[in-house]
Image (cartoon, rainbow, N blue to C red; front, side, top):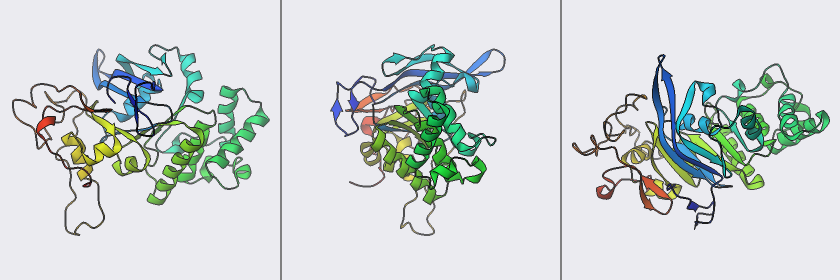
Length: 351
């Protein structure tokens, strides 16, 4: 998304009158390294999510996706970090410096988050119904009976069979996929306007992954909730999202509509990620494509473009010196590459 208020609506059209539901600008997050020093993990990150829109944050582990999403949820201090610069707006409200009590009110009714490995987010000492009902009572003010009825309703919404019976069961009685459904039910119980999903299909088998993705699609259609989907799996992005924000080494390096980014990537890193997707029909003895090297740790980013030491298109004296700015590539698209005008990069498939 360009650093303006021009959005690409969920139907794919550009509309300058549409204000973003979530607006992140120049977000910089740091973590303490030693007693006095701070290391930057996320630098000048900007993106928007419109109401009802599905946006993906993608990149390798260590790119800053999860740190950015936790900052949006106001959880930076909980993981030992701080927001050193930038601001986050939700529905026109500036969340910078929001008191803890206000954050607690916002989480649930305004925005919610589901995490990797849902079994770790569920308390083994309480039934799943009690855990959903607790959230509903706290945020919506329902009495115990109404809250439990809401818990049953939400388990039915996420397609858990025999919801009225299973609401009394404990997390250990549910499979990994079912636990993820419970977490989705818990988050959606208070009718949030934004759902942040951080690698929600990690550690699930392929069949269960597809079920969870279809569930998220159905929930969006039924409730109109906006979705910020954090993942490293570009195949999932193609199925679920309309826009994609590609991150590398703590910053946004490309974003735009999914079809545009996938077919005509503008950044070598994006092209490399797309080339690494396994495809049916490859020759059995052919090696999978991989980006050479590894993503640098915070504090170890190279001079110039953060990707230049891994990029096969890097030019000495250009890519290793000046740090490129995000440049507009068209309606709703941006890229951070000094050679954007003279590269022809391979997309996932030909048009």
